[in-house]
Length: 107
Image (cartoon, rainbow, N blue to C red; front, side, top):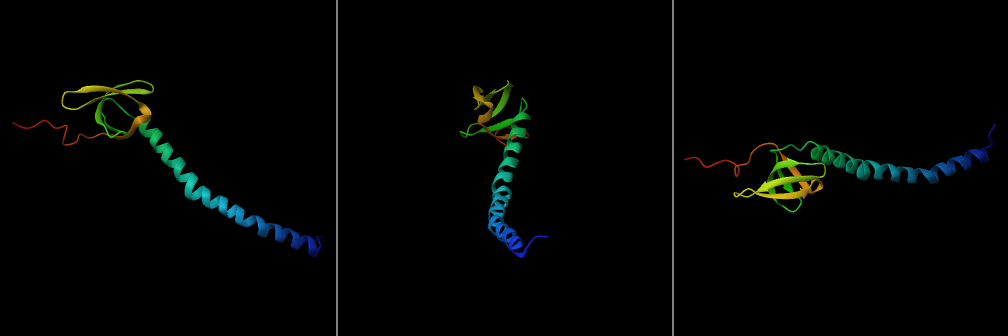
């Protein structure tokens, strides 16, 4: 049977360790877990890119995907359809729908 002194020692140790456990839990749920979710979402977006999608690069260039390779994509930009080769990781946003800039003027 544990003595009163042993019980107080265990309780004292628990009181000292509990704040550290709480701090680790707070860091996990407010910093680490949301970052992991964001990284997973970005990775899924980059893997689901298709030819024809409109993209925005991290440098602010808007274009349409014309070719996809493993780590490199080719986009065309501007009205003269200039082709630019960029790294897949340099894409910030992928859109499925056409924007008003892509629509041809009506006669």
